[in-house]
Image (tube, helix red, strand yellow):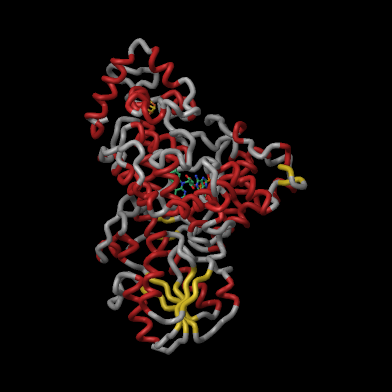
Length: 510
Ligand code: FAD
Ligand code: SF4
């Protein structure tokens, strides 16, 4: 192998060709990328997630070579692949005689720790670079909320709007309000079609057998054609498509759910941003500039709502992750202990909402936010599933699942296992909300209006059981409103709780 003075490691979610690293070509620097069993196996991933990551990494390595850089790519089945970053790096340092190590800040605590340890043990000079992707630094959120009791996303979001001068008139929010969320809660009533982007369609033949031959077990399905975008060019294509054809309706139907469409008007940009093929600021600016050019075509509520997801929620979740990791991954505020029902891995349940959200997740490695929060997450919380099991499922099943964003969303926003750091109250609902926001209940084996008896929707009794069993922890929460006075006045309370107990005993058979 040729000798090099420096090895630069590129992680699988650091596919940012605009990084300042790549501005100059240095033949003494070797860029290293690795497919590893430590990454395929820390949780059982959806097969489409593995294929998307490896395909994007391979395409990125080819792109860097095309740009003139020296790249060493270690495939999963290369005989010399020792299976972990540190073991492979040790081999490469010996083979190349390199004397210096450089890497970009990892976004996961696990890798951050592993690489820091590698550097301290290796004893040679090293530098750590920013990944030049996020719009706030790891510790900005912690500093912003220093000494405050609550970590309100809305306050952080306003600061980010001001810092980046997004949707502002002077220093005031454009349109007079910071947040137009109240206008973004319509149920599904769209009568026209939803256009589909024409992305490259790659054949997947061979992937499944190859992964099996490498000993990697996965979940979910891999159709013969794979159309997740895996390069920057394709990502920009999807972004333009979203801005042109979907953003105008994004806000209105942001929380809607239907069996007719999987993606509705959602952007599907999370994977592309999470592996850093596209930058959050270019997404935000594309949305704002479309609105500024044609305000008549783009409702402000849609544009603000979309920008808030990225400039607000995405940055906020990352800041919360770094503010509370590693302790965050063990939080279990309600002390929930139940295992995940088996049908989370098959979608085979009579509950049509769960069937739709899980079935679609297994088929496409995607569900939109309200499906994750108010269907699967809602059920797991009501049923008292252990947050470790819930985390494992979410971390494995979605193509965009990386721990810094999955963990605070799952354990925090969806399971309230952090006791209210991310959300001020648990996101739970009975069937009434699901019936209002979706067409799932029509044709379900259960009745959304029935609380007890044969065919009663499990969400109804489990909702009240959740509040009943957690009274001590929730009764003083000012955001819970009339829940406890209503529960206390209920004539059929005992029957309702008994119904819930019955369902809790047979979760695997719902
Ligand atoms: P759109 O609806 O088009 O939204 C645009 C973008 O906003 C997304 O691409 C995403 O980057 C950002 N965004 C929206 N909501 C959030 C949020 N709550 N936190 C962070 N960013 C957000 N997102 C992930 O990227 N990875 C995960 O592993 C993940 N796990 C989740 C688990 C649970 C239980 C919940 C409730 C949410 C999770 N989310 C996660 C957030 C959100 O559901 C996804 O980002 C979104 O569904 C991705 O689809 P999209 O790109 O079509 O999003
Ligand atoms: Fe889901 Fe209940 Fe509606 Fe069935 S009736 S789809 S279980 S909310």
